[in-house]
Amino acid sequence: MAGLLTAEFATALISGSVTAAVPLLYAGLGEQISEKAGVLNVGIEGMMLAGAYAGFAMAYGTNAMWAGFIAGGVAGLAVAAVMAILCVWLALNQIVVGIALTLGMEGLTSLLHHFAFAHSYPRLPEADHLALPVLNAIPVLGPSMFDRHPLAYLALLLCAGLAWMFRATFLGLDLAAAGEKPAALDAAGVSVVAVRGVAVLATGTLAGLGGAYLSEVGAGIFVPFMTNGAGFIGIVLAMLARGRPFLVLAGALLFGASLSTTTALQVAGIDVPIDVIQMLPFVMVMLALVAFGRHASLPAALGLPYRRGAR
Image 1 (tube, helix red, strand yellow):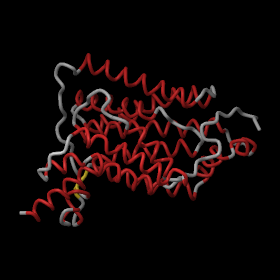
Image 2 (tube, one colour):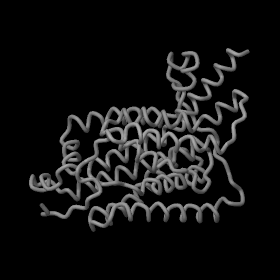
Image 3 (cartoon, one colour):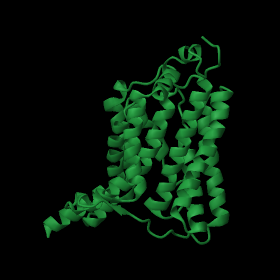
Image 4 (cartoon, one colour):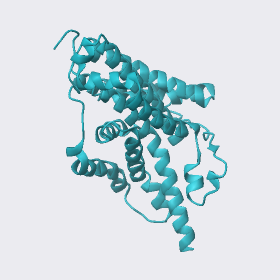
């Protein structure tokens, strides 16, 4: 009986960790792209919320999950476009604009939810999973890690793709130059505004996709403020990962484990106050910053606006 309980606890913990980690992974990878280009995207929380609402509303209205994911990505892209115009093109303060966008999206998505769903709180059907042959038969790990929604596997491919892009492509070099030496990139004839703008738009798209995953797959419902700081955790992951996508993956799984502890403990029959469990991710953030924050390697021009021709 004890062994069965331990297996059930481990399965619930790992499964919940992966489910909670996927939105954090998309947010962290998106933020990593933006930060490498020199833009501190504090508005990523608002982009996730926009994606979560748009994804849920589209999936519910069309009864098509993938339509919801596309809508979530587009919603995040739209919010990112505002940030790109204000922070990259007009060179306004990135932190102020990012906070304003987050607060604005919190208010807008709450208002839209109130008018559309506040009286019914509809739920989406369970999302389809893709089981990987052989791997999904592994005890404990198989059902938890290898029987997931395709977007979870796509996130892993994205980690590998970004790691290759950062290290071995001209686009990766341009991103790094925009964050480290934007004047040198400008002198080489490459538009810093274009590189940073594309980076911000990519960040918004990934954040919106992560938000849509959260509402469609993770929860099956949208409620106001449901990201609950996931975007800010994504910022911490990107900063601590030092430009390495697979470190973002490791951090996302770690924070995902802290988020899924509630479900796992319930499966094990252990009664722990919900407030204590909800506090765990933020305790983890503080511990991670204390342990690794001084070793974080941030681009020299991160957060600094750039005007063409400046030296």
